[in-house]
Length: 159
Image 1 (cartoon, rainbow, N blue to C red):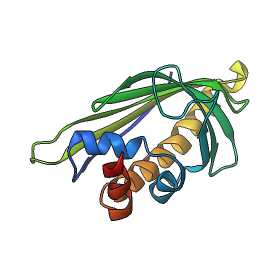
Image 2: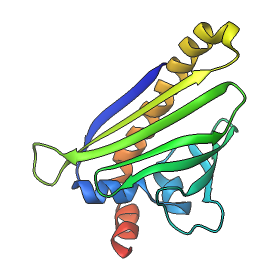
Image 3: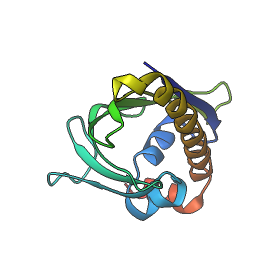
């Protein structure tokens, strides 16, 4: 099963990095270049294990995902419940840990997936790994900018 991963250091402590990663609405759209639309489903108002979300990507694809773990301020995990036809399965996790430099965090985002149909899986997953890696690299770079954006940081302080 293909895996893509990106990791970088952000200039905020893990609890702030985690809070930035869980922002929604206009605040999320300020830093996350992948998400064009995202909202909670089933009446949920905040993230938690078992909560489902709807996401429309910058590519126009939609996905319903479910939180399989929610452990502030260290990690969060999700799995695809419904999504683009070419994904048989997809899951991901984001981890936040203290960096060597005080007040900084290491953010590591990791995704795994399996493509369908089986007949073209080797080629589809080779292409998928390349495309998804590009997206995750852009996305985590946006996250780093969000961790330095005064508007985003003010929003997470208000929570």
